[in-house]
Image (cartoon, rainbow, N blue to C red; front, top):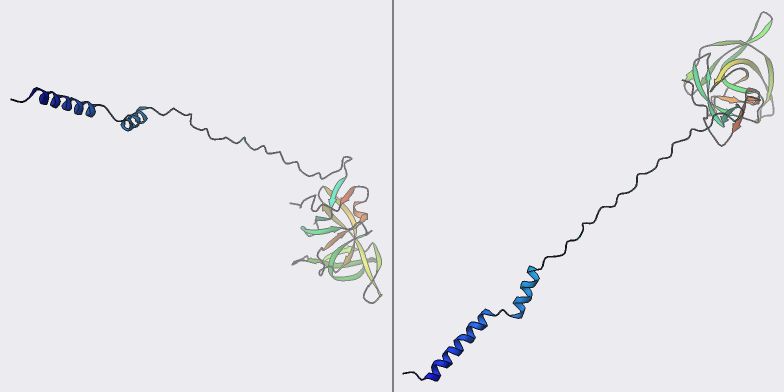
Amino acid sequence: MKQPWKILLTLLLSGGLVACAMVPSSEQTETSAQIEQPEPETESAKPEVEPPEIVEPEVPAATKTSDGKLIFGEKEWVYVPAIEESFRARIDTGATTSSISAVDVEAFERDGEDWVKFRIEHDGIKSGEINLPVERWVRIRQSSDNSYQRRPVVMMWVQLGEMKDHTQFTLANRTHLTFPILLGRSFFRDVAVVDVSREYVQGKHQ
């Protein structure tokens, strides 16, 4: 027969082991608490919306002054109705008379008056023969040898923007120059102003 103290000791030891098995360790308790605790809800970041870009309306450049005069740039398109062609022209405030590129210039007499026949030529454009009376003759000094050349001046219709004018042109071979037409002060005096900081203000005739 077992002794009573041995039986008691066995029971005590068995109870302690069960208690140890049922009580969770501190590490297990902390882990469980971390898992069970829900994370606080955070409001999702809203994407930044850029304000719409404000586009200023484009203001068209002025083609006239406040008193109604046309504005010419340093360079403009000039339409010649006689041959239905537009040419680039330079506005020269230092020149009095305009000039146009002419080749095959030949003077002749008709009814006792001086006439001239010629063709307008520049940048691959060559017109048919044009016959006009001579308004006057001018002497042009040649810079190369200080000699003078006699050139005819004729009246021709041209259009620049809204302006149509029957004006004087000196006939000169300008095929080697950039601009086949040069407009002097006699063309735009009192009806237009020149802004040399601008170009092609009046646009091209359509």
